[in-house]
Length: 349
Image (cartoon, rainbow, N blue to C red):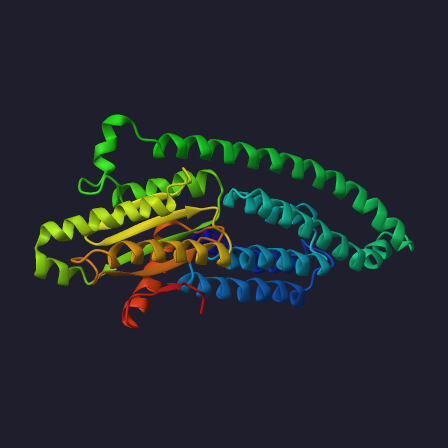
């Protein structure tokens, strides 16, 4: 969605040159070329900033708000430049509906209305004098009354549009992510009985997207499995993998929404919806390490095994499965590079 809004910002760059063309033919009395240039420069700067950030952080919620606020600031600059765009203040909230987030829609609606009040107060004296009415306050009150009614009507419409969109998406995702018995075996790891990597993306959609949860992901790697396989054979290696699968279930299976999968080989992934704080995530990781150490240390053949863990939060509003996995996997890579047998939680640079 950030990619779509990036294109919208670039298309908005064409508005000011178009109005400037109208000024040339006296279609916009009171509008100057300088006002057109100002509004163009504002949206151009925001479009460049949005494009650069999107290239490096495509799923970040910060990029979304940069784009929305950039469009809103441009409308403000155009308004105080006497461009008659009263209805355009609802362009930003209505565009924010594309993100299907009620909080984003309400936030941008409030900001848009406040900016509409400020800009109309700033131009009230100019507009009142143009109508041979010296009372700027009277012009402001009369003008804002009508715009407020329009704003309320559009806000209520947008609110119910958002509700309908979210309901439709929930239904669509629910139909897609729920699997029947005949499909179950295709998503189950045969050795451990856990979910396999094919199911994990469905689980993310089900528990994070549909239910609008934030949460965290763990990517866990069993260290020194090659030593076990080389010393005792692959049957012992398989026993170690099944034993660790039981450890994961013992640690995390208290919640139905937790999803545990064997990603491949000796790597596992755990999806933890509703784990939102650093303290909660650290506690989960500590329990897993403790249970793992307790089990493997008491096994004569498997006592060389320990675990490395990479973790990441899905705090961004537009986070998808692949972006979350990449963050957790990057944290795991850093742990492995620094000596294994530890954990790291991904943080933004």
